[in-house]
Length: 238
Image (cartoon, rainbow, N blue to C red; front, side):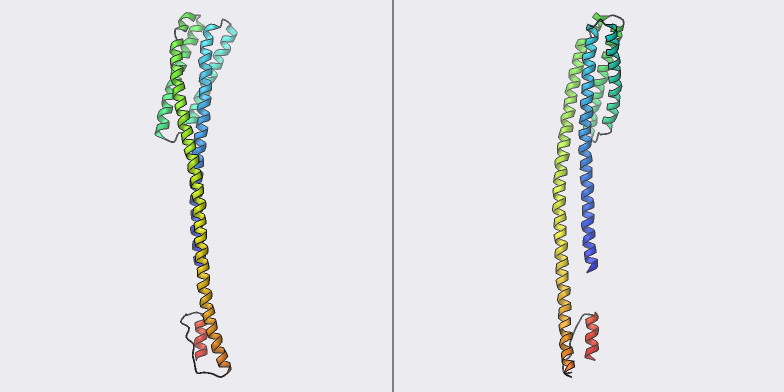
């Protein structure tokens, strides 16, 4: 009886443990996707700033302002490299990897165009720097499209992982309830069987005891179980 209870408790505990592992994995996947979105958004903001700053360089004649803009562009490029490394830690599929590799190429292309504009502005070749504006616009538009696609993809994955987590949690609660109810049914059924067995044997022993008290040795009792009641019945029958 005790072993049955322990076995059922073990099965129930093991099930809860596995369910908790699944929930943790889904939660981690959701957090990875939401973190990825935040990194992409910052990449987009930095790239937009560099895009606008590169165009501003051509129109301003203030040397100090130019230096400030160039320093900001350089800082954002360094920050973007860090964001790329951070996003790499959240990638969990080949599709995600492929789309992000395309974004990296577009970012690198934007950096190359910006570097050309900066070099020409430093040499006061503003007209020649202006010739790269169309190329910069085109590259920026391509990057925006790729970034939006990746954000949508991460949003979809985040929503799917959240729904999966909710469904898994609901199923885990249902499964736990079923296991618990089954355990209780088995325990109650076992208790009824054992109680009935003890009660029946006890009644037979008591009945024989009453007859023996009246010196009535005409009948014996039969208890088939090899337990304490079986031993008592054998002793009394002798």
